[in-house]
Image (tube, rainbow, N blue to C red; front, side, top):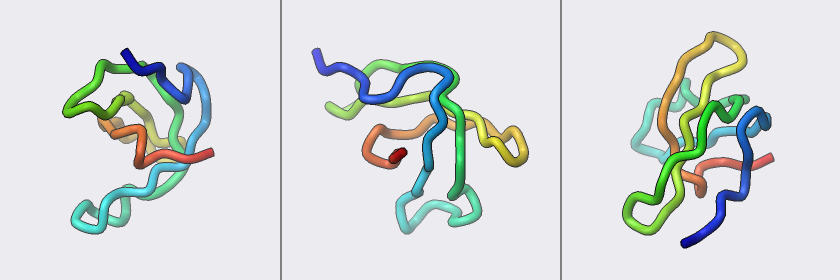
Length: 63
C-alpha cells in the first residue's frame, strides 16, 4: 500500500486537469487523506480563498 505524500492540515497547490474547470486552480488545505482509486492516492481538500471542497488526486497537487 502506497503512503500519502501530503498530510492533513498541510497547504498545497491544486492544478486541475485541462478538462476540469480552471477556476478551481489554487491553494487548498488537506482536510482528509483518502484511499487509492485506480492506483492513485486521493485527498479531500478545501480551498483557502472561498471554502470550496473537492476530492483530488495526489498527482494534481504540489507544494
